[in-house]
Amino acid sequence: MTTVGIVGGGAAGLSAALFTAKNGLETHVFDTDGTWLHKAHLFNYLGIESEDGTEFLESARDQVDGFGVERHQGTEVTGVEATDDGFTLSTEDGDHDVDYVVLATGTKRGLAEDLGLDFDGDVVDVDVTMETSHADVYATGAMVREEEWQAIISAGDGAAAALNILSKEKGEHFHDFDTPADAE
Image 1 (cartoon, rainbow, N blue to C red):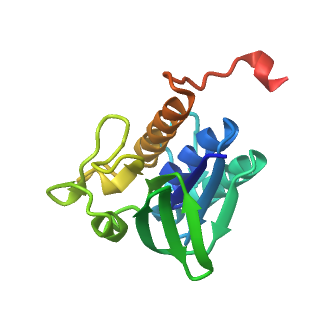
Image 2: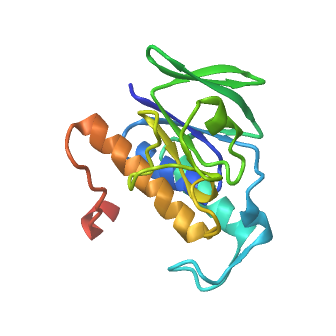
């Protein structure tokens, strides 16, 4: 089974996890819980009139858990290495082999530097799908934006990365579009 390793559990990481897990990919989120959302109150997130950032994270975590995401809460990824078969994420709990990597670590770009990803100034260089200069590695949110650090933009970046991964896996453009019948 295809495995996606997501480093970071804020809006970008959880958004990517939602789409990949919902559509059948084994998904692991490594989250040290250092997201800025804990300091935020959301008035500018489409569909949310007013919500504390920590409450938003709790709801988002519950949602991804419902789709079978394996969350490694409190687990820091200390290294990432490209292998012949994908990537190895190193943590204090051991190594995890994955096929795809989504970096959603805010302004912490050390793992991107370790992989030798291309940068545009201080930010990781990505295409419109959030894919980096290294195939099957994606960067999202504040990693790729100089100053546009908004949770809703980050969630969109995570979704874009996930949809590109799903398109690659399915061999055609993939759209995650639910209908009311899907909710029944």
